[in-house]
Image (cartoon, rainbow, N blue to C red; front, side, top):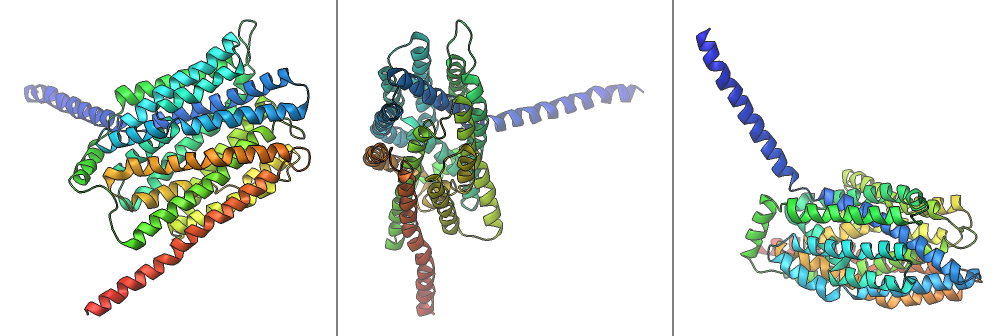
Length: 454
C-alpha cells in the first residue's frame, strides 16, 4: 500500500508533464498556422467590398436620376479607384518582397494588414460623417502605400511555398486558396443582410463596415504577435540562402517557360479582372437591378468557386492530370461562363453563368506553383510579387479600356465586355499550350543526351 502511495504521485506527475508537453506542442503548432489570418482578412474584405459597392450606388443614385448617367458615375468611380489601387503598391510591394526574401517572412504580411485596417476605417468614417464620395479615393492610397494585396498575398504564398515540399506545393497553395474562398463565401452571404442593419442613430453600412475594421484588427494582431514562421520555413530559407538566388535551372527552355507562365497569367488576369470589375456595375442596373442582399449572394457565388476549384484540383490530381492541363481546364471553364454572362437578363441566368466558371480559380494558384518549382526559395517573395505587379501594370492599361467600352455599349449591348473577357481567356491558353507541348520535347532532348553518353 505504501509503495502504491509513493508511485501514485509520480504517475500523476508524469501524466501531467506529458499533457503539458502535448499542449505546448499543439500551441506551438497552432502558432504556425496562417489560416486564421487568411480567413478573418477575407471575411473582412467581403464585408468591405459589399459596403463599398452599395455606398457608391446610393451616392451615385442621389446625384443622378438617369440610369445611364448613374452607371457612368459608378463605372468612372470604380475605374479611378481601381487604377489608384493598382498603381500605388508597385514600389512598396517590391521593397517588402525583398525584405521577406531575406528571412523576415512576416513583414510582407503584417505591413499590408496595417494598410487594410487604416483604409477600411476610412470607409466607416465616410459613412458616419457623410463625407463626399471622392474622399474614398484615399482608401487605395493608404492601402497601396502599405504594399496592398500584391504584397500581402505574395507574402502568404511565399510562406506556404517555403513550408511545403515540392510535390505537395500545388495542393498546399490550393488549400490556402480554399480557406480564402470559404471565408469569402461566408462573408459575402452575410454582408448583404448586415448592410441593411440600421437604427435611428446608425446608417446603412455602419455595422457591416465596423465589423470589417474589427476583423482586420484581429488579423493584424494575430499576424504581428501570435504567428510564428516555424522551424521548417526557417530551415528552408537558411538552406536556400547559402545558394545563389534566382532560377534553379539556367537552361534556356526553363527561362522560356517562366516567361510563358507570366504571359499566360497576365492575359488571364486581364480577362478575369476586367470582366469582374464591369460585372460589379452590370448587376446594379436593369434588367438585374440588384440590392444589397443580392449583391452579397452574387459575391458569395464568386467565392464558392474557390471551393469547386479546390475539389477540381483534388479530382484532376487523382486522375494524373498535369498542372498545365489543369490550368487549361480552368481557363476553358471561365471562358464559357463569362461568354454566357454577356446574354444574362435575369438573376437565375446570372447564377447559371457563374456556375459554368466552377474551375475558373484553378489557373492562378497552379501557375504560382509551377513558378515556385522554377526558382529557389529565396526568390519566392520577389517572384510572386512581380507576378502580382505585372497584373497591376497590365490592368492600368486595360481597366480604362474595359470601362470606356462598357459605357459606349450601355444602350446597345452592355454584355460585350464579357465577350471581350472570353477572347482574352482564349488568348491566355496559347502560352500554356506551348509549355505543355514543350514538356515532351524537353524529355526527348534529355533522353537523346543520355543515349549519346551511352
